Length: 167
Image (tube, rainbow, N blue to C red; front, side, top):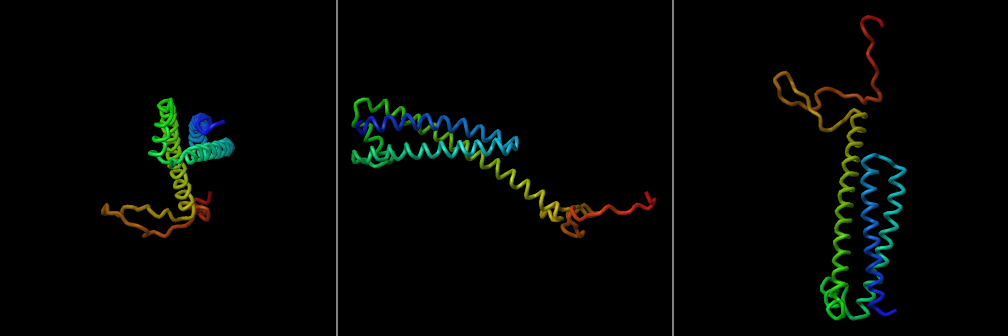
């Protein structure tokens, strides 16, 4: 198989893998939103497998270009396509791959933001349970905010007060 065929096969595999990765990233979004850890673990394993496949296909593409004395850069890829009969078709497929990868990157950033939001929510809950929410303020009788005037106890150490009625 020649370098053009190798590149074409690797490109098509990369497009398939990137499209599968998009679907997996959407599954990851659902798993994060529903807090389904078992599903999330399976999805992350699929995600890692697909990323490894994409990296392998990228390495093949890089070698093919370097064998043709082209750098694996946008300019090098464009020069490579320009030297080929039917290079415009490969260029269109390359653009499809780049678009799919950009979509994957955006989905991954979105998922990272969801995870960070949930992490902050858990951290805040833990601080509250420990008696230090770090950001709360109360209002004094004059309507001004005041911080930390009242001593706080961790909820986990709080005990109900005995009622005056002896119930």
